[in-house]
Image (cartoon, rainbow, N blue to C red):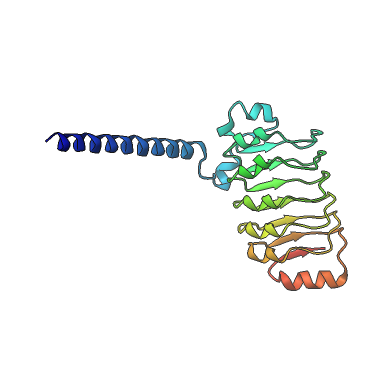
Length: 207
């Protein structure tokens, strides 16, 4: 009889532990969903305020959808950018950036990223983690190539990479929804241009 009672107590104890564990998982998951929302529609997005300071944005991190840090003489971007989990548009135009923090790739809702007019010589492969990215501006840098991982950006429809030193483009871009390719003032030969046009017949290409 005691063995049966002992067994029942152990059974209840295990059940209680499992219940608490599952509740904890549910709590963590639900809070994660609250933190990162479904991206806003284009119409609702542009009803949101634009923040021009990361310091101000971090005061209300989950209410920030558009952040414009253009022309602020930045030579680095704070890792705290990852706290802006609902960010959809980020402009870093005309700064002095050469690298980007790995935390930037955690912004899964990001749809538009402007890196024009900086000092980038290479884009990190991790840029391919921004699966919602629709528009990418990397013009007026020092790029000699673009990463193959751009092909992971299935929703990418616009790529601006003018005023660089490109001689080719990654073939993986055919896996995207690219419709506009803006790449004047690079180092493409006539043969390169012909090959690119054949590779992307659906694109409006400006050399």
